[in-house]
Length: 128
Image 1 (cartoon, one colour):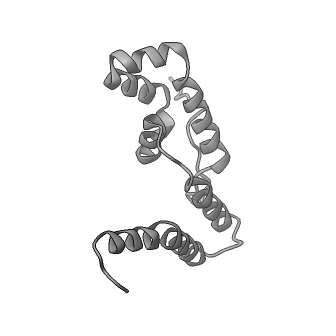
Image 2 (image 1 turned 90 degrees about the vertical axis):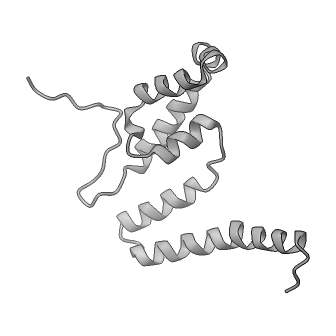
């Protein structure tokens, strides 16, 4: 018996890069499915069953559980386009892996880490 491939499965190229377009398409399909009446009702009565059902229906997220969990919980994915863009830059060789990592680190530091440290310092009365 021949093995069938899941057409929705996230594909990787020979270098191991996730197909960014397929990932975004899968996220959109997952979000749309979550809004269907059947799933909205299931989430209300059986939150665990809701997650299991979606996990079964979207096996392409097996290798991306962090993203799956964020989507299912309705959490922010505002950082995702920046990460995916950097992956695409490395894939197309317009940036080295190190350049992409440096840019991601800088963005995360400036947008998330520094403001959090400043807020905690203010709350705890720490002066610069």
